[in-house]
Length: 407
Image (cartoon, rainbow, N blue to C red; front, side, top):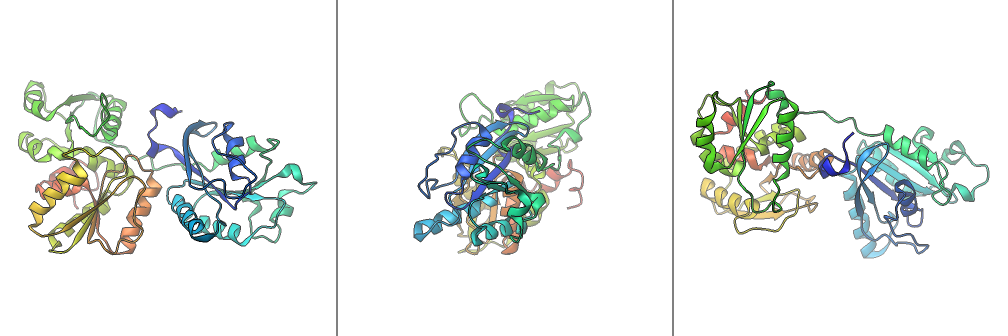
């Protein structure tokens, strides 16, 4: 089982706790985690913003716990909190609706349950405060509410009743995942994969960025050899190899230089393209990239990153990509950026979206963003695909990937 320390945020199971104010969401969160992760108070509306906590939760393993504000919050500020709560659903893998078992099942409880169903989320209805009830059982509580009894459980955060059962039920709802490989299926034991890794000033000192770490691990899982080199040492590294490498994987930022060094017969791709494949949106990225041919004066492009980091003077999303886009299109286009979870639901102002590889986002959130773009007829691509396209080498970079050679 993976541990918390070696599991990226985008790979953790995201469990969201939802419900009305004072239903006991935060108390249930604390009982499930055996930690005081959330502030508990008798005052309605204590939780004012979604609270995220990465931790190890047995028997699930590495998870992200999300405690949300009350869905029945009121006023202008309450509406904002409710909107944030709805946004949390877009990154939630398992939804937990906490209901005060001493009060009737309310309209906003039903609205939340219907949202879970609409988004095809695995969910549990957790009737809380069993310690305040007499002999009531789950079937009686669900009767007449529309709540499927098989999706419900009765617990007490106060006494701990059935909290362990709740954790077991959550473990059963864990997404199975698609098990897409990053690069291991492209390698045989003993193959050499050359990884071109510029030292990115945006990465924390002393560390590689996450996609590079994950690809190195996947190469080793395939019993292959990972030869890691900076771009200025690539030519010498290739010359020093006894045999041609099975594949060269580069940071997209140096695609142009690397493509000129690596022989045409050697498969070449990038960390960003592999990450888009791993996250399940490479085909959409390849379809969407053609919009670069149709950008005109006055168009606006959204460049979106899933992570947040201190912007550097030569940042890829805010400096390099805009510069390359202007040079390629020869058009007076506008560039807007977003980062972290700051994704705009309304994409109508944008002619296209260029997204990062999404290593810090889970697949559900990435698919939500892709669906937003598709529903609004806004082409959606990613950094690596766009950079390869602008350098005229996209077909070459897709050749190593099964199923992409014909696109």
